[in-house]
Length: 208
Length: 65
Image (cartoon, rainbow over all chains, first blue to last red; front, side):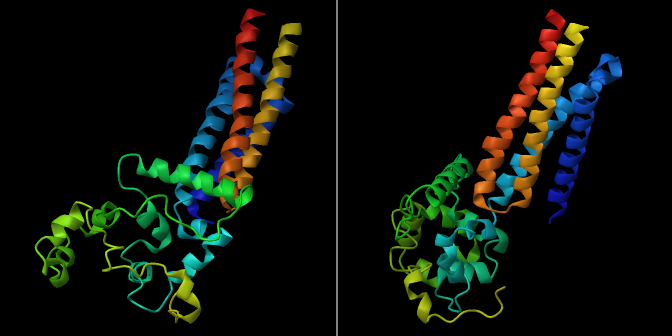
């Protein structure tokens, strides 16, 4: 268990104990000190616990293990460990081009305004489908993958800006940056998760 | 005396709602599943919100009494 979670649990436990004292001895609120205590224990502390708790859960929902905890995501998790550098997701994950503990969120969050909020709203829909809906046979993105998400990290990077293939055609980089030519579906980086080929794939032994 | 006992009764009710809400929140923090987030916000948040509202109502109604 992480330190922030332990501290939050301690705060919740502390609050619950103080609330229990007030429930058992409500008469102590007759004094001025008791009134202040009641305000802190029955108003400030619960709201504080809730706010920190929601913030902690939102942060945890960005983790790779959280995304992969749904059964339907299991092959996508396996694809991160394919021992083949042409697999885009695996190459990013294994070489820490994205934080390994937030791999899904880093590539699949929308980097436009309120992108994080949209990702969370999509996540709530995924939870609904997981528990109450009908799981699709094949998962699809809500919309075609936007180059903006790639350029969030790669734009300005020397390997991207001065790469031989990227500069073979002078019109290529402007088209990519304007999202007129997709990084993924244009045929350049089109092997991403490719979960249909996982049965024949070799897996990186270093992945834990 | 009656006002005091009504206030104490409402404080007890508020406290019980808050304890349930806090226990749900703690359980969800230990339960690393996507549904835990929803349970924590919807169920735990609801209990905590009811507890806080009952507490605030008890203060206001005590002054009126």
